[in-house]
Structures are given as structure tokens and as C-alpha cells.
Image (cartoon, rainbow, N blue to C red; front, side, top):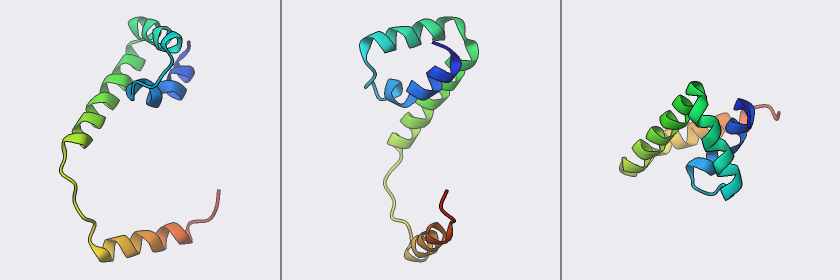
Amino acid sequence: MDCQEIFEELSEYIDENLARQKCRELERHLETCHNCRVVVDTLRRTVALYHSMPDEEVPEDVRLRLHKIIRLKPEE
């Protein structure tokens, strides 16, 4: 696996939904690639931090503004 392939599989790897063989390949790459290891570690910490935060309601005015912005965004 190269770095690009790592990024393509990263979400499934972090969520522990990656096939065993792909997981082993990814982990072999992480043993030798410091940059990818940093990305994986950072993403894991970000996900853990997100899950540790309490759920909060988005204020109605913010929600309405967000929906308006999303609708106005040109399609890509």
C-alpha cells in the first residue's frame, strides 16, 4: 500500500471495518511511514474527542442559516 491508498481506506480502518488482509497491509505501511502514522493517530484522537463530547442542540437561527447556505452552494 502507498500513502494514497492509506487515505482511501482510513475511515474504514479507524472504524475497524476494514477487511483483515487490507488491515494487515495498512499496518505494515504504518510501521515504516511516519507521516501516515501521524495522520492515523491524529484521526483516532479526533474521533475519540468527538465521541467524548456531549450532544448539543444547534440554535434554531444557526440551523436555518446553515440550511440556507447549503442550498445556495452551487452544485459540484
